[in-house]
Length: 323
Image 1 (cartoon, rainbow, N blue to C red):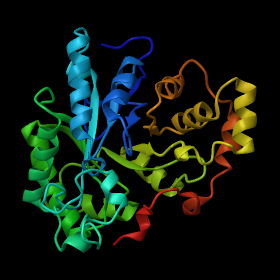
Image 2: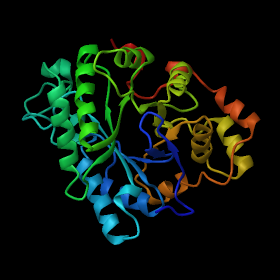
Image 3: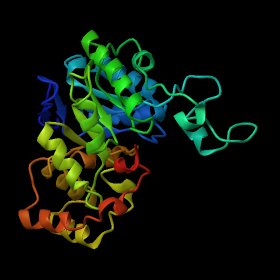
């Protein structure tokens, strides 16, 4: 059930009739996922983005179930949940017990085997992708009977692995356990290779990438739009590192908005879905106040001119850096 404060949604052309809310809450590195998800849902958010590698699928699912029980007019179909398959099975013995542990060496030293290169094999196979999805779904609890959107989290294991995992996810869509499937951190070449492969009959519904004024991936975004692939921006606020930009601050001052609101509004007007992360209730609410106003063309142009290409990225993922 929508309300005046509920962010609007746009169609997923590759997964009709499904739509994706333009604003979501990202829970990457969240230290209090359950509370943050409840805050977001109470503020009108209807889109949540989690992943196996975030180690908070259970908290996300539990918060959704709790919210639905206490808000009976709202149903599961009103809430859009996205999660992602990691390249190795994180439930194996010897894996980090939580996200925070990955920042430290494992007991006895060495490194955690959280990548295919370190572990020696990948969960990006047809069978393991299905098993991995089922782990994600089960971890969210009994109240979550399906996942709206499920992604292959990265392209790193290579073209054969990507294809096999995708074939597995197509089976998940056929089963109804996922409404749509997509990719994250993929380049144009990765997507073209996939959709040209034998057995592929579903085009990715989304490509989730780092996107903000300082790293715009213009060619990739343009390609996705041509193919009907919705671009979802993670780290749209650069984890706060670039919000002091004088151009952003000057524009924010004139509109009576915060720097974060201006950046998020710019992303939306660029046709990109945003999933900003915050664990602060007031910031979660602030980030949702993006409707009923817009940036003028000249201000859009000034922000667009801030682009630094791939050198402006914050995270590790350069889609074009992988085979």
